[in-house]
Length: 144
Length: 476
Image (cartoon, rainbow over all chains, first blue to last red; front, side, top):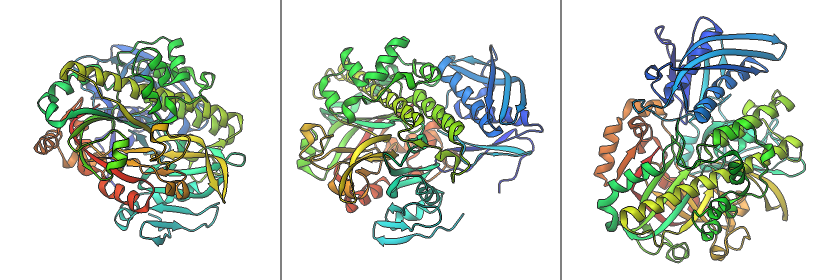
């Protein structure tokens, strides 16, 4: 199995057809943030994106996996619908509201496309394939 | 990895016998060589899992280019009983009606060789990849609804392309089952600016030349008359619109039916005639129409670019447009009787033999054109559908090469610049919006397309007509 590099917030693992990554962090929220950044790194060098525009996110899921899936999809939705590229997550909160209902609220920052942003490609969708939510990492395969 | 028992039936057919919760056996159409690759990932497990689904008929099928997908393998076919069976967004895929069209031309390779750079530059201007920015069509919501309802008919009515183009598109360029009320606001928002954009990943626009004709008579029927003739191939899908439709319905079905009894969460489905099943079919049909318009518009602008750069687009007729990711209600012979079934093709091409009513009249006596795109820098194939395919694979054959190396591996092993230089040595010009994308799509990361096509031909589920090689490649 791949060794974890403790300096990394996320890393990509081998996957024939698509992209598989693990996102690390001390809390579930940190791991969610790093999953969003890992996915964004496929699309663009997110460090170069200016945090000029803020967006509020408020989504739900029946379980943590669906919440993660919806979180990643929200970021893809904003890219397609608003041309919004993620730079960072300013705030995030995950709450279990009741049995079978989780909620994620976040404030994210980024920018629309500018001449000097280098776009690598896109992501079609997050998937449940090989998805794992653990205390030390979360793992996702995305369709590209 | 789990060891799955596979029996060899003949040179190109393998079977996973029915066991446990499987309702039917699984069958894999591949050579020894392709089977070695197929065994290396989760394809066999996935094709076996699909055999568990309610109402599946005959077999769960994997084609020669099969590789691991999500829930369903890519390069797979499954048909379901209309009353007992299910429809599954995962059996279609996120990129609904990802597909290919081939445009013939009257040009010869030498007519365009020194204009290739200019052609690519102009194509990039007209057809953006569309990540984070829209295409040149600016539609309002009511116009987008017309696109979703009428597919490529909308394009022709608005002055793009001709009625002949519709005839040469699977389904005549639109599915009448489209119903906009089944589509979410989110899907509309994702789709509104992306029409006429290529997308990224393995999507491409290629200027090709006919390298070899195997079946002159059929080739002639398809408008391919000589080796050296220039053609254009467009590979794209329904962009964010289709991805959102797939995602919306996976979630709805999960909330309605739960996934606890499924071998894989991504196999989520609904009975075909249930409200959710029928709504998914209506929304999927909208995405199918969106993708037809997308490829149609890209074709239109390609013709405009040829007019501008070469001076003419005369003879640039659409040979055919095929869907690679789709579910359709089609009539097939089941236990000797004709019956309507729901065929899921995920990474598979319809391959109907001569005589089928669905084939445009001009091709009906020879069979349906089947288009199999290669990867960047390798051959693509024009094939023809067969009665054999109707007998053993619900009228389907392979759709492409299928990856064998991950993007990670590709990025470690190849540099985009090196790949570009190597291709140039083979006289193939490549222009991409990202140099990283060129490395990820290096020709070496794909299965041997020639072997995939050979197996389809030998098995008889799609016969070789002509081989095309790239002259200039545009990648999103």
